[in-house]
Length: 339
Image (cartoon, rainbow, N blue to C red; front, side):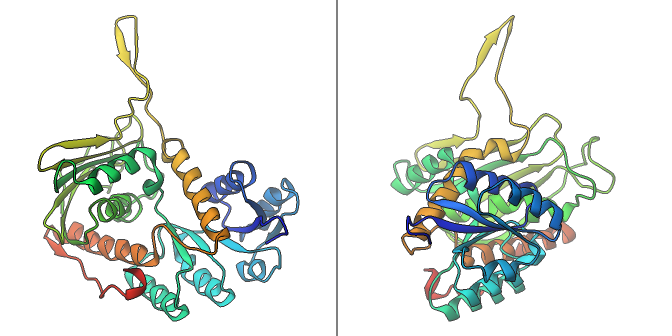
């Protein structure tokens, strides 16, 4: 870090998410600067770097890690590239904020888990940004307080206006429901032990071959039950909601009632159209908390264990999709580093 303690961050991957993080670190986050950007598209990386003073463009992550200006990594490249980058980061002993997924499958996530254990300390925070959303933080505090008693059920909705070409039923679990997987584990502090997927007759708006919507059911180690409506071509916007039903009360977040208008015989409000606008504050808070912790020499937030557990539950969910049967989650024993 510089004499002023500013954290030099290399952003790996400069697609939509990575470019947004470059903007965020450059103009929103305090205590950090974009020291490098990395992308296999050299022209795109150079275009971003040219707009930021002191930023260098690379098309190889290892070269960026070797730069004396780089103190930490933010990985926003496609999931299949994460394992190799994370293992290289461990060799350089660099702290990392890794966008989800940690890796695309449980086996590779377990390899990362084992590699980090060999270091003897955490170096990675996984980017499950809902843990930093103001409404979800309020719900978490309520559940932790036990003011309404024990949580018995969660009812979740996850709706997207539309999907890009090539979006598959498996991606509904791996790219979308994965957030509810982490949210469930975090809110309840329980592991998901089994998954069942129910599929109604697809919507007429669903692309050919996509079974949309679906109802995903989780059973947890503490005896709670969670249902997730996943509807990725609803047509009207992006909605994420969660209701916790407890022994003596319930609480719901995500209704989007920050402002309700009444005019000309109508009432209503705005609906976000994608995750970037809905969770902008959460992304800002997540990156700022990561920078602050890194500058203190600490690692907090979702761990490699959380990334591995999410991958294992996703695999159970995809199997449940294919078979129509209740599918147990296969998890290794939780290591002491992550307890």
